[in-house]
Image 1 (cartoon, rainbow, N blue to C red):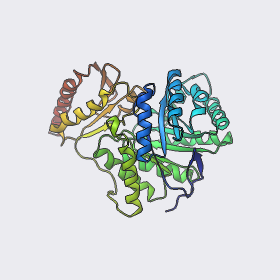
Image 2 (tube, rainbow, N blue to C red; image 1 turned 180 degrees about the vertical axis):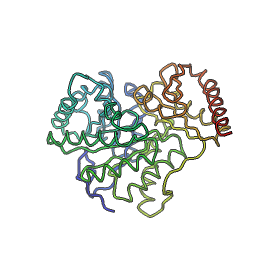
Image 3 (cartoon, rainbow, N blue to C red; image 1 turned 135 degrees about the vertical axis):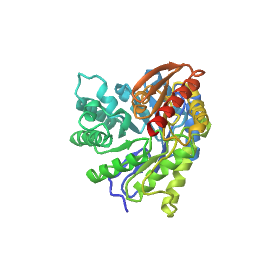
Image 4 (cartoon, one colour; image 1 turned 30 degrees about the vertical axis):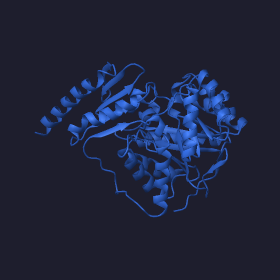
Length: 380
């Protein structure tokens, strides 16, 4: 099916309409590590990324961004505004697109109406010729939306949030925006994007399975979602989110282009629905929000350590930062989110404390064994 969304411009790339689906990725290094981040942008450009995202969380990140822009003047850069949306006016001169998360915006300056925060972002984007992305993540939807639906319905709150913010941008007369609705479950990515496309067929969609994990499982989850959506004419830009060593970050772009090429030539590997059996490890992509590079090694170690339990239907989440970690581990049987010097361990929404990177695998195994014993006893 042909896509019917409107066209928006991100630097020298256009998405939507009849334009080719753009492939993007995100720098994995700390933004303030200027040399390393410049290297990341260079690697992603070499890999063929159309758009490259960088996280900015404080004024020092803004200073670093200015140097990065000077070093890579032709890159189409997107800024990920996390917990400080007021930095938008400082970063906008250096980038082509601003991305914000409605859930994060809800929690900042609670006394101020969300519409006024969105108005500010639109004014900044308009003044600097930037496009915008409304980035909705399952683990960080604002609680007011979540409270309106049953606990087992995580799609409707995401959809409501995205549609509400679209209406705000429409009311402000700003049409250079796209939307993303992401989850670590490819089925929920498929369902939420189909429902959004039915409600707003005019709005370009950025597709991705967040926290897809390590290859090959992360590639499989992503491929399934993309095949099911793009063949329906849904999707204008894609991001493959994989947990990778920094030097291999370009693999996200390579994998994305391979999936697009396979879809174009009818080489499909999808199943009607993604049904995961056995151990399911969810891990976020290595990105510039990660506060300790050991996170990548930890995710790999968890995969190896849990091999003995591979036949048990258990989900373990490994998150790399404070931004997405607390909320996006809630649905896992066991969840970890990594701080600079310790790892927070959870069982569902219950906190089990924090442990050093040397301690965490042993404690995780203890909790995993306990969980397996409980599940086995229940079945018996």
